[in-house]
Image (tube, rainbow, N blue to C red):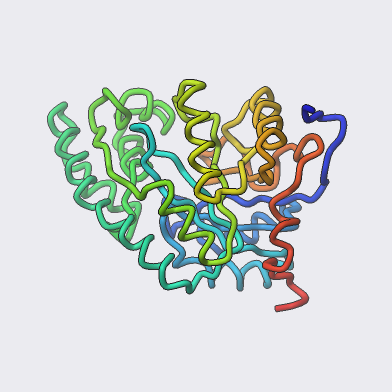
Length: 296
């Protein structure tokens, strides 16, 4: 059976993937909640990279904006030489194992960032570490996105997509690999905290069909339950591909813009197509975990 866009499983405007200033977004959790509400989002999750420090603010901001909320995070994972992202939804943000695991995952970001700056200095771009820090208050959360914004600021590139074409990716100046969490670790942290693990934007990874099959085989073997079907970086064909995959592997389906910034993101909060086909939305599996404004 394949999924069809002529049979929408749900018209709920859920946006379960976005980033705030707590990681590499440009808007605060409060501003994101307000933007989500203004764009008609009914269920929202903030999924900062390897960081859940903004969850209480997001929950309170969702309440103030009158929208339902789920806890969220995007965990960085190393798999087959690629950085893969696993979104966690509906977990307990105070779970000690999750908090400790994310802290460990964040731990190597500053050292990696200094190595990235040294690599950029070799091609004549100096002061990149200090420049990137102007976009983030905590070195533990510094990322390639912060470097990209600095390179745009100083005129090296016109926009952040150009930065990632010329720098900071494998084989280009500024690229430094980092050893993130293991796939099994990330899934276990999320599951043990009561949440559901979701493979984020699978169409972005440069995997062969065999490697992608291995990713999902290992992911489900560890207890992973979901896949992001509709997301800001997927094409229409990829919506269909991963809807079919969700049905084949009996995975719940998620929807999220991966919004970072009003000037950088391809898709705004709440502006994605609805989930296609006869899919099982992740929010139905997490119904008891949803914080609704009237219940707060």
